[in-house]
Amino acid sequence: MPVVFLPHGGGPWPFVDLGMSPHDRDQLADYLRSVATLPAARPRALLVISGHWETEVPTVTTAQRPPLLFDYYGFPPASYQLTWPAPGDPQLAARVRALLGAAGFATAADPGRGYDHGTFIPLKLTYPEADIPTVQLSLQADLDPAQHLAMGRALAPLRDEGVFIIGSGMSYHNMRGFDLGRGGSTGARQVSESFDAWLRETAALPAPERDRRLGAWASAPGARAAHPREEHLLPLMVIAGAAGADRGVTGFQGAAWGVRLSSYHFGATHGA
Image (cartoon, rainbow, N blue to C red):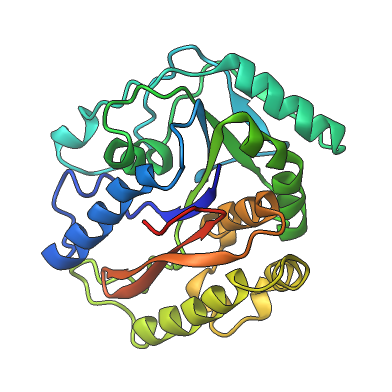
């Protein structure tokens, strides 16, 4: 299986109007639909690392039928009536914990947590039938890039077990910079493009140099202006760790709310 880092957009887009230009909205939505074509065979399960779940130790969802967690606020009623009834996979959750435990990570399980919008919004486009078992894995609250790269390395065997690992975040995530009808901050587009160029270059490097640079991401051009807090970038670290020797390619390059966004694929047999 390939591994993919994708931008999940903001809140319940594109199912309600959040002020994204129609061109940008359609381009990103079409890309997310195309992600289903990346694996050469249908995945037996999905493992999703979302930028919207942080815990003290890596934690997995274990419910047989996870609910949706509407972790966004102030949107129209239709935003809270969306459905994406993908089954859970307790056996995969146990396998994730075993792999992480063998790598020295303490782990936990959460039988009650549902899929947050970093999971169900993009995957409602990618897998609208919601028929592939899905487990969500949290970030570690310490937000240490080296630890998240190590998490990904520990999870790499899942790729040979039919599990499609997806990191759901954003290549740019500074709410002050998005143009959400209030006027984005001056220079946000330039910041996003500078940091995006660094990410594209980094993803394509051989694994040792790629991982070294990702571990020191905060020194990249525009890094802290693009990510004042890095929770939306860290899913990329997990994906890069799981990528092993596979070099990254830019799967998507577009824009949303006035800034540059991109996705990265590792080990895909073809482009999205």
